[in-house]
Structures are given as structure tokens and as C-alpha cells.
Image (cartoon, rainbow, N blue to C red; front, side, top):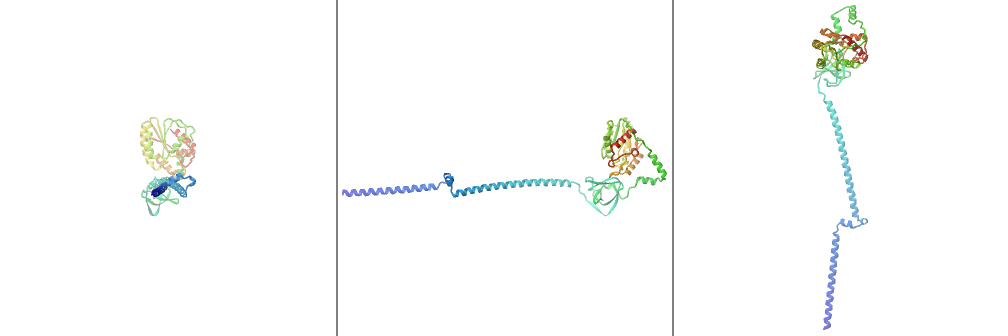
Length: 382
């Protein structure tokens, strides 16, 4: 009985020992499972950090390739942005160029618009004075040439500015309606000859009396208080002589309007007792001869009352030029001589130069030597 009890105790002990080992095994298995589960929770990033570079997986290589691809995409995007910026800059330049072109076109288009009524048949007309020919029917347009006194021209129409459209060379051009007429201007010398018929011997006799032989002036007198009033011919004369004691009121390309509005106020400001006023205007606007006569006579009376002496020098010879003819000059001088009052002393410098000789450099203006000759003659007359 005692032995049986010992045996049962041993069996029970062994049974208990076997259950304990099984639980231990179960616990070990559970720990391994937990460990494996925890290991699976490690992120790819942590695994990459823990794994040496040489042992990176194929997936890591793919990710590196993807990163390089992303960098390439970014580079291409940057390049595209640069290209876009360059295109924008080019577009801005194009825009600037376009604006420049537009500005130039606008400047060209700033000329006044006009319409022309064409004639059914062209007409022949004549210039009543030397006059400019222009690209369009107003003084806003460029000058392309000129007509001389009595020149015949073909007129094809008239603009709404009243200027005539003419045939000028092989193109159309425009002339102010104020300087064209249907009838050919009368040659003043011929008209005078027809009004006063005379024999050839009479004509020769009068010519000799009108232009006696003149001795050239060789000595320049120093005359005080001289006021020279004129156009570009006096401007160039002043530059050719030593005349510091004289007052020069002269501007290029001027005529009656300038004389009335600008020159006379300046003369009034410096004239006084003993002044000698010498006027030489008209070559630029012979058509204003009557206006000159009226104004000069009126002012000469005022200046003479102040103790001044007034002189008017004839318009001097011209050669071929697009502005004025010798016939117009001679007619102007004839009218001035006959129309000026006794307050004005006439100086016939035209006849003087014709007698002693002169040299023109462009049909209107003289050489330095001729200006010096003319200056000496003027001073001798005062």
C-alpha cells in the first residue's frame, strides 16, 4: 500500500512537470510571434537606416531611380521656366519694337488728312511768283521743289485745303492756290515797252543814262550810327566785314511779315538823332512790294522826325534759282523807286554791282569779296 502511494505520487509529479514544460514552450512560441510581429512593424525607412549601403534592396534602387527621375523632372521644369522667361523677354522686346513702329507710324500719320477733287480734264496754269512745291496740300508737308515766276504747270485737281494738285516730274505734288492763275503773267518790262513805244536809239540813250559808268569804291568809310536791316544777304555781309560799330538787324529767309512784326520794334528801340537806317528787303517776297512801300513811308516819317536818315537799297542781282527771277527783282526795284517818299533815300546797289561786277555762289548769295565791295559802296552812300 505504501509502495502504491509512492508510485501514484511519482506519476502525479511527472504529469505536473510535463504540463509546466508545455506552458513554457507555448510562452516561448508566443514571445517569438510577438517579436516577429514587432519586427514587421519596423518601417522601411528604419530598415534602410539599419541596413548598410551595400546591402540595400532592389526596391531601394528603384526608389533612388525614382528620386533621380524626380530631380530630372525638376531640372526640365526649371529649364522650361527659363525658356518661358526668355520667350516672355523676347515677346517684351517684340512689343517694344512694335510700339516703336507704332510711334513712327503715328508720327507719319500726324500729318493732316485731305481729299482731292480730280478735274475731268487737266488745266494749264501759271505761277504768279516763285513758290514752293510740296508733297501734300499745306505747309505741313515736305518741300519737294519749286516753281519760278510765270512757269507753266499742269493742274489735275484741287484739295479741300484749296491747294492745287499738279504734275511735277513723274509724280503728283501740290502748290498753294494763291500762287497759280489761268492767265500767263505779263512781262512787266514788255508791258512798259508796249505802253511807251520808242525807237531803238531812244532805248539805247535811256539805258546809258540809267546806268552810267560807275567807279568802284576802294576805301571803306567809317560811318557811325548805321543800322543795317535785311535778310540772309545782310547776315552774310556782316560775317564778311569788320563792322563792329554798326547795328545789324538781320535774319535769314525773312520778308515783309518779319520786318513789320520783329525788325521795326527793334529799330524803334535804338533809333535816335544821327541814326542812319539802311533797309534791304524784298528778294524773298517781291509780291509784297506795295506793302513795303506803304510801311516804309510811314515809318520813315517817324524816324526822320527823330533826327534819323532812312535809306532803302535796291534788291541786288540774282541768277537762276527756284525762288525768284531777275525780272521780278527789276520790277520790285522799279516799283519801290517810284513809290517811296522823299523821306527815303534810294541806293541803287543793283546797278552798282552790275557795273563793277559781282560773283554769286548759289544764285542768291554772293562771295565774300562781293559782300565787301557792296558794304564799301553802302558806307560811301551814307
